[in-house]
Structure formats: C-alpha cells, structure tokens
Length: 599
Image (cartoon, rainbow, N blue to C red):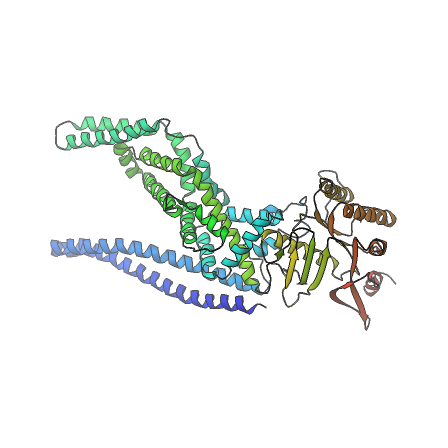
C-alpha cells in the first residue's frame, strides 16, 4: 500500500474530526445563547418594561441586536460545520480508496456505450470502472470533460503535455484540491441546475427597449414617492396614492408570465451560482507556474475584475429579487418601486456584459475540476509515472506495467515492448492465465497516457494512437443482430478507419468466436494480416496456435508472447508473468476433469 497518501488522509481525518467537534460545540453554544436572547426580549418587554420602561426598552433593544448578530454568527458556524463534514468525509473515502475500496464514488453509468470503439471493453464506466476510480469531480462540466478525455484518446499531443504539467502542479496541493471538492459538495445541485443560468442568458430580453425601460424605472418610482410624500403631508388625498399603487401593480402584473419564466431559471440556479462563486474564489487564489493553468486563470479576469466578484454581484441581485417571495413585502416593493422589473433590468444588464464570459468561467472551473480528479489519482498512487510521449515512428515501451484497478499487493507487473518494425503482438496462454487482463492493462494505460494522466508503470513511453478493441461484443435483439454480426461490424469499423490512412492501436481478444474452428482460424489470420498491412499496431489474444505461427512466418510484423501455467502436485499454478514465444500448456480438459464435468 502507498504509505504517503494513507498517512496524509489519516492525519486529515484526525485534524478535521477535532475541528468539527469544536464547530459543533460552538453551534450548540450559540443556539443556547440565542434562546436566552429570545427569553431576554420577552422578559424585557413584558416584565421589566412594566417596572421601568427605559430599562425595559434598553434591555429589549440590546437583546434584539444581540440576537441579530448571533443569527449571522450562527450561519457562519453552520457553514464551517458543513464544510468540515465534507472534508472529513472526503478523507475517509480516499482512505478507503487507498485500501482498494472505491465503490463509494460516482461510476458514470450514463456514459456507458456498448458501441464505443473501446470504452465498454476496457470497463471505463460503471461499477468497478476506471472512471469510478478516477472521478472526484463536483461539477457537471468537470465530469463531462473527464469522461470525454478518456473516451476520446489520444488528445492532441500538446494538450497531453499541458495536462501532465498541470496535474503534476496540483498533486502536492492537497488542501486546495480537497477544499475544491468540499465546496462543490456543500452546495448540492443537480446537473440541470448548472445549465439554468446559461438557459436564462439566452432567453429573449424581457425589456425590448433598454433605454426606454431605464427611463421608466427611474421616473415611475420617483413619481410614486412624490405622491406618497404629498399624501402624508396632506397636500393631496390618499386616493391618488391608491390609484398609483393599483397602476404600478397592474404594470408589473401585465407581464408576470414572462417574468416568472426568467425568475424560475434564476431561482433554481441560485445554489449553483453560490457554489461557483466559492470555487472561483478558490481557483483565483492559485499562483500557477504551468502554461495551462495560467491560460485557464486568464479566462477568469475581465478588465482586471475577477470572475468571482462578477458572480457575487449576480447572486446579490438575485438575493434582492428574492425579497418578492414575501407576499406583503413583495406587494409593497412592487407598488412603490416596480421591484421585480428594477432587479430583472439590472440582472439582464449583467447578462449583456458577461454572456460571452460565463461559458469561459464554467469551462475553466470544469477543467480544473477534471484535472483535480487526475491529480488525486496521481497522489493516491505515488509509484505511478507520467509517460514519455514519443513522436515519429510508433513505439510502446513499458517497464513493470500493471492494471491500476488491481491493488498493489495483488498486482503482477510485466515489461512490454512494441515498435514500428514488430508492431503487433500475438498473446497465447491457457485459460485464466491472464491474457484478457493483460490486454486491458495495456489498453487502460494507453487511455490514461492519452489524456495526460499518470500510468501504472515504472517507465512508460508511447506514441499516442487512437484505440480500438474487440473483446466484449454484445448482440442486440432490438436490432435483430447476432453476437457474430455485431462483432463483424466492429471489425469492419476498424478496417474503414485504417483505409482512411489512420494509424490505430487495435486490441483483439479471441475474435470470431461465433463460427466453427476452421472458419474462425482462417478469418482471424486474414483479419490480423489485413490490419497490420494498413498501419495497425496492437495485440491479439488467442487460443489458436495456427494464428500464433504468424510470428514465425512474418517476424518483421509479429511477435509472440505468452502466459504459461504450471502443474504442481496436481494443482494449477499461475504466475501471470509475460514470456516470449508461444504457450506450451493448455488447461481446459484438466479443469473439466477436476470439476467432474468430464471423465
């Protein structure tokens, strides 16, 4: 196990547990003091006031002011408590992850695609998946970006290298990463809530003529206040003020349906905006050195004003608009000041100034969110390495490469090499010897390398190529497709991509299982020969030793590797170590005999 992350998380757990206990005690203490303030107010008004009005008024006012102050203090303590609860939970979950348990994280089932070139074969999404192991995102955009990265490898070489540097820079910043996650979890929002502001920004403007609306919104409240003042001092009758109130409410009510459409979107986005403000404040506090982080942070400033301040301005405007939710106050404010329109006008003005910037802010936060997940992955696995990205002629060289989802104590690592000359490996071995796991080990590490993440290897050098695989094909009753036809379509897709002149890395596991042995052998040999002639590199696992003979017939194209099994004291022993050549042992009949299936 990795001692460094485990020790770090345990220290954090101990620290936050103490801080949380203190916060809860303060929360309880302030609650008790608030209760005494309420009692003090009641006693001052209904007992002390009858004895000494001046003293009663003074004490009553004192307890009211103290109560209002304590309301703010109480809210701050609650926010601190909730924040500490999230930090404590984050470290507890990460500690479990370092011990091999990661089912508590979101698995990305919505991204499962059985028709994807490789994601279904490589277990990218779903329970026990790569995404579940990597994913610590707290924003919808971050989750979407992380999923896209691992589904669309390789990213552009420049992006891979930029991601690597940004991830390296974030790895030691444990406090920043955990605060980012905690803020994201404190303000719980749904995926659709994050898009509410974006949807609202592109609604048709409520005010068709901004200059006319601005003039009206200044003149009408001024007239109303003048009428009210004149009525108070007796210069005019109250009937004039009542008429003005009715007219104002009629004006506001005349477009209430359109107003409510915009307000509903704003109201639902409130929590998402407050979370965004906290995340922006945190990101803006970074002092990055790498190019990518600097580029991202540059998107968060406009005219030297940080995005967090702009979002804060919007949340305050929405807070002001929310005063309408109290019916009496809402009627009063609208009857005098056209309150709903005043605030919506200012909010729309904000939108006009920042419509082009908002998507950049969301993208920046999401990108940092996705990088945080990969930095967390790197921190949890300090023995993993960032791959060297090779250019020019194809090469793949791995030293002590293993599968990242297998715990370190159970992981068997292997060295592996492919090159432009012998770019395709034929893998043979007995059942359960480790062929499919090895294929996924290569595939998963290529996926990690292709998005800038560290890989499970001591050394890793690769020329990034698009990945295609055929390992786990499914039939479709809805499309009336058999398993065999579904597999043929996958193979056809690979050929079409190669015929476009693309170089591919292709991983095949016992293809053409849906036909007879002779047909399977002929088809498999023909397919592997065809794709290697068209600039395909990769691996094919097979039980067919005739296919493995390609390594003898065309050593300039193929290399043979295998997993052997030993029989000791009538027991099978697997070492899962890769060896050169073609396997000499098979175990199907032995296992069937041991299980009593055959004599």
